[in-house]
Length: 346
Image (cartoon, rainbow, N blue to C red):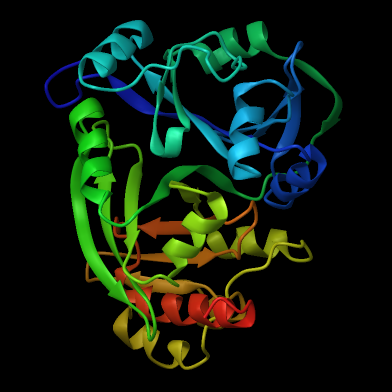
């Protein structure tokens, strides 16, 4: 813990989803190559794992997750973050203005400190060794209906994006900066043919993950649609990092996960704009993968359609490039707006 990292943040441990229909959510994570390995001994909370990514699926009646799902539908109700000293980190976060969770909306799956975060979801405070055996052994048992399957090559959470109400982006940015020491690394305005948004991208003080924050500027924008369906701000999408995105997508062929359609003319010029891409261009187009980069490196990325209420997943590969695909925003917005038109939103 220091001035640059006032709470000693060390990374993301887990994302917790809440749903009254765990079988449907299990199918989603199975498609991405997660194995269901463990269950809470006293609550209907399952643990899904792939490399360094941990997903909890909470369907326990009367829990905080059930309260959150009652307000938002199937949703991302909590993030678990790792701290060098969770008790000291919690005290410092509260001193800096975070609102502590006191159990008022039901019990948690873990006996750990927590504060309210985006849209009254929770941020859970874990210690550095909690997921190296100690926490797993104490709070989980082997799942009686375990589903072990080959991974799809997703290694860690690259970033997770928040959608917020118009006029509140600055306040949420200050929350992450003032309480936890995040720094702003990018800000941009994006416009499609009919809608637009403004985004701030924040990086955690340990450099392990980012939180972009989006604010819409039209009543029918994708951000406002999310806010209406989710009934408030929250996590819009989670990005899983792969070292070989095309191989990961090959392994996902045949799944029910649908991705956004990209115009064919996008591929007529993208490899001139980003000429140093080493992967096979025809495979990139076949998978509808987006490409962005500069002289130093590039990224590959693809976005699913909505999977959990209005929440979707991004899959990303980076080669010496830390942007969020700003060069793709035009093509991405056209695809999102076409999807909104098909669903009657625009």
